[in-house]
View 1 (cartoon, rainbow, N blue to C red):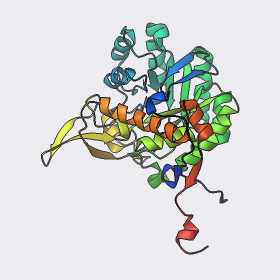
View 2 (cartoon, one colour):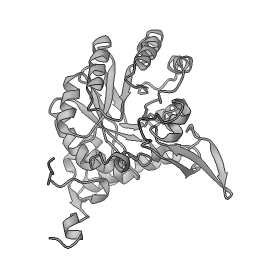
View 3 (cartoon, rainbow, N blue to C red):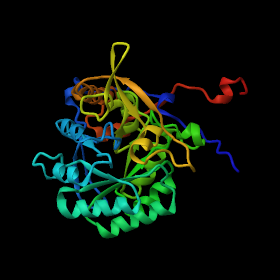
Length: 346
C-alpha cells in the first residue's frame, strides 16, 4: 500500500483566469479542430464533442441532429446489425459517427460482419470497457488494429499517463479518459476506484501528445464551463452523456411525474441496463450505475447551441481565437482548499 500526496483536481476545484483579449465577439472564435489520427492516418474536421455511447444518447437520431453542428456521436452497441447497416448506408450518414463495441467474441464477430457489409462507411470505432487496465483489453486492441489498420480507434477507459502511452503504442488513436466521473456512474462509490477528472485529463493529455496521440475526456461535465475546462486542460475531444440526455433524440421513454414530463437516464452498468441487455446483474458483481429521471428538454438543438456558445465564450475571455489555442492560454485558479485545511489540520 502507498499514498500519493500530489494534489489532484476535479472540474469544480478550478476556474479559468481571464486574460487580455483582442476579440470583440464570440463569432470570431473557431471551435472546430483538424486532426490526422496517428494510426489510421484518417483526417478529422469538426467540433470535437461526442455524444456518449449510452443507449439514451448514442442514437441514430442524435447523430443526425448533432451532425448539423459538426458534432460526433458514439452509437450505443445494442443496435442490431440490420439497423446499423441501414444507418451507415444513408447518404446523409454523419461521417464522424463511431461504431461502438465491447471486447467479447460476439462483439468482435458482430463488428466483422457489419464492417464487411458496410465497407468504408464505417471509419471510426469506439472500444468501450469500464476497466482499460486489463490484459484482455490490450489483447483485443492488438487484434482489432492488426485486422483493421485503416480504422480510427477510440478506446478506454483509463486515467493515468502510463496506460495512455501504452494504448497509443498498441494502436489506439484516441484514448478515452475517465473512471467514475459520470452523473449516473457509481463506480467510485461502489468500488472506491477512480481519479479526479481534471487531473486525469491533464496527465493523460501530456502523455498522449508526447506520442502524437489524442485523448477524449469522458464524463464529469455538467455545464458548458466544464467543457471549456476540459479543453483548457488539454483534451482533444470531450464526450457527453447527461448533458445531452432528456431530449427528443434520446432513447429514453417520456413519463409523467406529478404533471411534469420526465425521461429515464441510466448508466450502462446500472441494474436497469443489465436487466434490459444481459438478463440481470450477474451473481458475481454489483451494479455500478443508477437510474434517474430528468426533466424532458425537447429537441437537442437548443442544448447544442448553449454548449458551443459557452465554449466560445470561454475562448473570448482568454483571447483564444481557435479551440486549439485554448489550452495554451488557460491558467487555472484553484477555488477549493485541501482537505487538511478544511478540517483545520494545516
